[in-house]
Length: 119
Image (tube, rainbow, N blue to C red; front, side, top):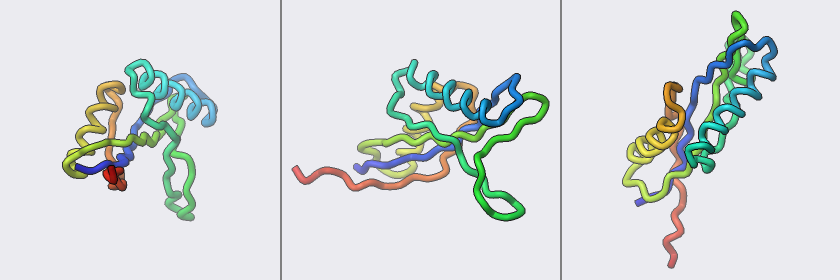
């Protein structure tokens, strides 16, 4: 059994917004609130980064059209005692997906952590 850090990307919609910074703030706040209400305060919520197709520099994953923003969020969760990285991914998606119903999730990275079994 191993411990893993699972990083997921979520697509969050924010309606009736005209400023990109407001959209990002609302998305992070709403996601955090929904996770905390379900007792998932161990999930870290950040704004995702997207590479610019022209210059290759990263920028915050957010876009506004018709006063509706799509904000890409990065959700990080530690999974303990999983059988494999696939098992850790399933656990993370189940835990986060249960709290964030109707929010598209995609695992983007799974990192195996050193376990503390020196006891």
